Image 1 (cartoon, rainbow, N blue to C red):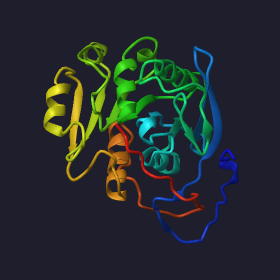
Image 2 (cartoon, rainbow, N blue to C red):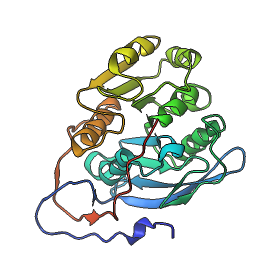
Image 3 (cartoon, rainbow, N blue to C red):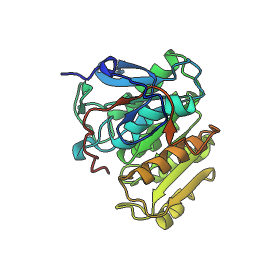
Length: 271
């Protein structure tokens, strides 16, 4: 059964409540479908502020689907739960081709980051067509490879302001891809966990030196999966700072209606 965000039940206790992993704050949420240039239908969700005032838009690209990554990978799930209400930020999440989640399964099959170029283009075009402003790509692990390979190329480069990367492994992205970002001049913020499994801060600084405008931020104590509220919250705050949204750090308590998410899905293995 496909999860319907309209099924969420919101309640107001009359007192501020702590924002926890399963806390869902108010937003206008809808299940969406993206159509790729090669004719596939990708499933996703768009969450926007209730008042309709959108400061920025995050177009999220999830970790490796063959290792458990999907649109509900926990940092992106928490972004959709919190950022529309706390920061006025719209969050677009979707499953890349062949990927499944409670939202459903996207058409097609995993292409190791090759045919997924059309998936990135479809998501960005959807945001453009909806008139969502101040668009930023946010990739996590495998999603960073898609950002680096396609985000600095036309037409996407002209449709987004820049990008934020979480835990880039640099397995598929090449020096040529980094060179394209350098030429684009688009802002690039790179969040690198101290204990990452694939690329740690010192090596990341060396690789991203090829992109003069890239800003590499080492996150002490963090690991590739950003497990734990401390690190997920840090990631969200760094994303907001990177895209120029004031008001960080995010509030940790909320006065108003909240819902509780279904049992949280497992964190992805990533890459």
